[in-house]
Length: 77
Image (cartoon, rainbow, N blue to C red; front, side, top):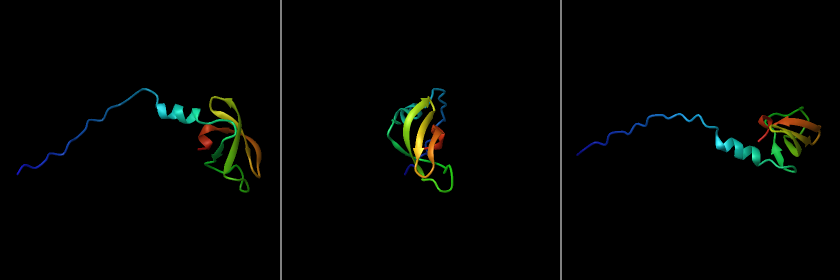
């Protein structure tokens, strides 16, 4: 009876950008509801409606019980 040797893999490093990040940013469109990672005030909703993109990583949005806000893409899902 021969015991199987565990296979070890050598880690590899990839210096190219993560293509999944680009895809997730492209998925945002005006009129899309997104979930906020943190509330902007204690009384506001945890979702925002994206109104228009103002830069590569910022959106003007409307948040119920808060109003209009400019959000960085790191602030929502």
